[in-house]
Length: 249
Image 1 (cartoon, rainbow, N blue to C red):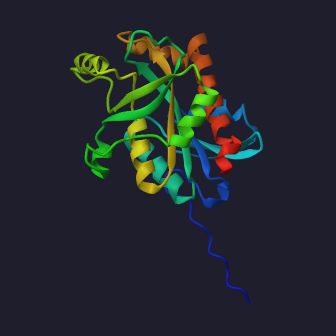
Image 2 (tube, rainbow, N blue to C red; image 1 turned 135 degrees about the vertical axis):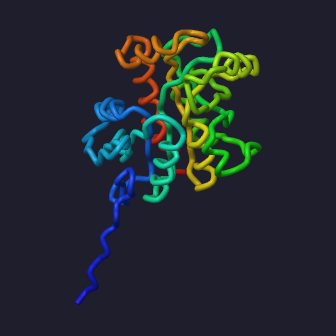
Image 3 (cartoon, rainbow, N blue to C red; image 1 turned 180 degrees about the horizontal axis):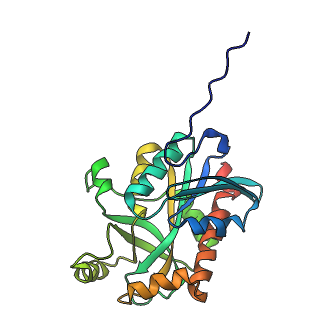
């Protein structure tokens, strides 16, 4: 009598298993964005929705891809990336929103990180601050193919919007040439390097530099034209990269 096959337990937070059948994932903060990317995929199939982790598996240009939300901030994103690694994912692209740190970056413009200032708390628990947070060269190369008009440069990942000295901190980093702020790119790239995952972060600018934070975030919620187009552009860029034939080499 054959031994009964052991059933794989789902990951505790994301509820993922190896049954997702792909090594490629796109992550995003907002669960609603999972519904948006599903409309761009062929045969999207809902997978799980637990806590902030909503996932769907579909195909794009014949390539099977997982899309999953991670909520806001490094801790929840870090859990998501670790659990993606546990089920065999080897390529992760973050598609998220950011605030511009330079005055010449308009709403809806994509900002693609060539490196990240690790101004979050969690990544320091993994490795010292001198450890760099950098994307996969291959994914970055493909980003230039599909998003040549994006802004490329260093971004900063941080932990909070409402810190008392936020304006002073942003002014400091703006003067150092930082392109945009987000909250998850740093931990994505650190865990990616430690776990052997190729990563990339594609950000949609939703707040003008020195603009009103609440107005910018609300424009994302209300799908203002420029921001909505930037979101679509970022999702399509990620899908095109992960389905490119160069990924098979």
